[in-house]
Image (cartoon, rainbow, N blue to C red; front, top):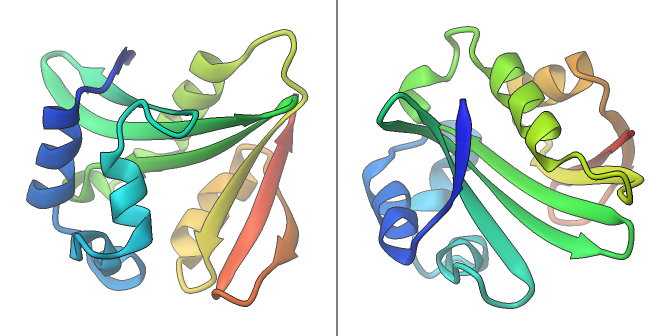
Length: 142
């Protein structure tokens, strides 16, 4: 798996072509703040990377640096969800993002997305808090 900085066109293609169900179906509403943030490639101190396998985008990861912590927002192609690819994808993201100066990664996950919570726990993330927006925060320490 290789990671390449995402272009605005790639971000739009992912946002409008990939069709998530359930906890992440909001991703298809272009007026949602999370979608708007995703489409602002390279703005507001954020970066997005496309994860490629051969010549196909199989996922993405958005990152925002806050001191020695990276907030991450990974996403796997919805056609690959439930097929045992999440752990491998997440481990590849962690390896790609590892820098000696980083202390930890943070991610916010919908409380309804138990499958994702399980995958994050399997690779070493721990739940650290919950907030009013029905999300939990998980952290991974290097």
